[in-house]
Amino acid sequence: MSPVEMNLEARFDAYVAEEKKIEPKDWMPDAYRKTLIRQISQHAHSEIVGMLPEGNWISRAPSLKRKAILLAKVQDEAGHGLYLYSAAETLGVTRDQMLDDLHTGKAKYSSIFNYPTLTWADMGAVGWLVDGAAIMNQVPLCKCSYGPYARAMVRVCKEESFHQRQGFQVMLNLAQGTPEQKAMAQDALNRWWWPSLMMFGPNDADSPHSAQSMKWNIKRFSNDELRQRFVDMTVPQAELLGLTIPDPDLKWNEARGHYDFGDIQWEEFYNVIKGNGPCNKERLAARVKAHEDGAWVREAANAYAQKQKAKKADATTHAA
Amino acid sequence: MSSKQHEWPLWEVFIRSRQGLGHKHSGSLHAADAEMAIQNARDVYTRRQEGVSIWVVPAEAITASSPDDKEVMFDPANDKVYRHPTFYKLPDEVNNM
Image (cartoon, rainbow over all chains, first blue to last red; front, side, top):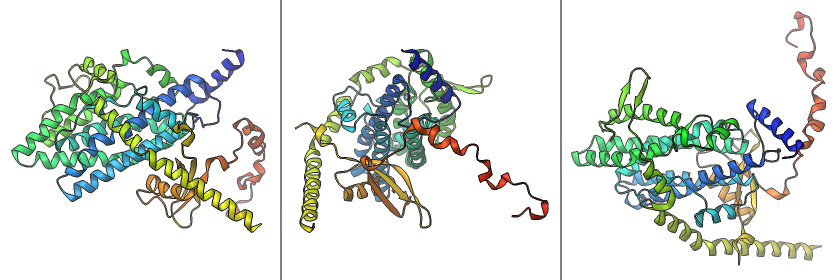
């Protein structure tokens, strides 16, 4: 690094430390730009791939009301993906590049979406737990140092709250329903609990990028801090539902003022990230197929736009 | 054909949230033409009654001031406190002026 760059970087660090915002054309360290592109594009991919497990239930929703709600939710996820792709593009990466990276498996998305949604209760558990964990992660990002990301997150968080509430309501209806329905809700909780805790990422000691991201005000709280907050918030909600969290080690710790909980099976987490989760191949294949099946639409729209432009130019020439 | 040559152009979206207010920048999106940009903006940025009117502008048509010129452009206003009403200390009798 040249002395000029070192000076710029020192100024940048001081500026960000004062809680000031960085905008697209401002100078920024390469590593800051790269970190953001990676994080924002992965976040966008997660929203887009996140539509798939829920899309599975749109045609199977138990009532017209639930179908309308689920459609609105899945449409929101598409919107969130689009806000985030746009935010990433302000850093100089193209949409096509990001999609290529997703489709070739180079880019990651949240591994939670590599689990299957087996019953209707999964729509409840996903909204309650997965969206709940996502909110916990996302709210601090509204104050992130990069302006376009922070603004996108404000929109996302405003909309996400409905997602969690509708999910909890699905769980509540099932938990108060027939014994079979309640068992279905319990089964969904059993399957989604641990993967939801993994959404906060590795333990702090094993999270190599965290310190730098915190220094840059991209990240505000550590993975373990947010995970603990999620557990503390969710346990009373499960009690209200009359459901049991599948963790024999879960208990209130009076001294800490927090719930203690059991060890997370990180081996499973890394295995799913590596591509060996129950649905990795299916999700990616569905995403690639949707993109390829849509190619003719994108090309036709482009051709039409060119034709209209040529027509307009032609008309102007003749008029002159 | 590589899809890279075919990426739809980028549009900046401005939304008037209600009559009486100006259009405000909401975000951006890709669309093949202006008409599609308006439709996409409606779906992406006004799903919850956020607007009553939409402008879309090709991103490449926007000329922006450079961040490097920030000081040259905006600092001269710093020392002109007399442009603000609070600069003028007047007798209490005319306090509401």
